[in-house]
Image (cartoon, rainbow, N blue to C red; front, side):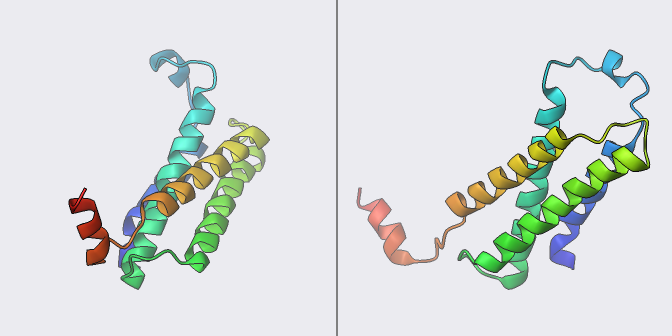
Length: 134
């Protein structure tokens, strides 16, 4: 569990901040059209990256495995759905929105894509030497 502490803390932060009343926060913070969707996307991008980082640390691996990718996608999607369901049914001063869930899923997809793109085995010396020769 210790490998996932940052992801857990970020998930709690996302859950709390998305269910808090805004009470005029729009007047205090400059906003623009679509900022809410951008915040949802960015929050779930960070959550996904932290989950994948924790998983790779737990497994002590530098190679891509499909089980963690699928599990992280499901965990992130469930958290996004939970947030929207809570906003719709419990915290009615907020509004549950399908487009917010879509933005959450886009952020999750971006995190998965970044992981696939950047998570490589750099311990392989032939990869390092081929870059040094150029």
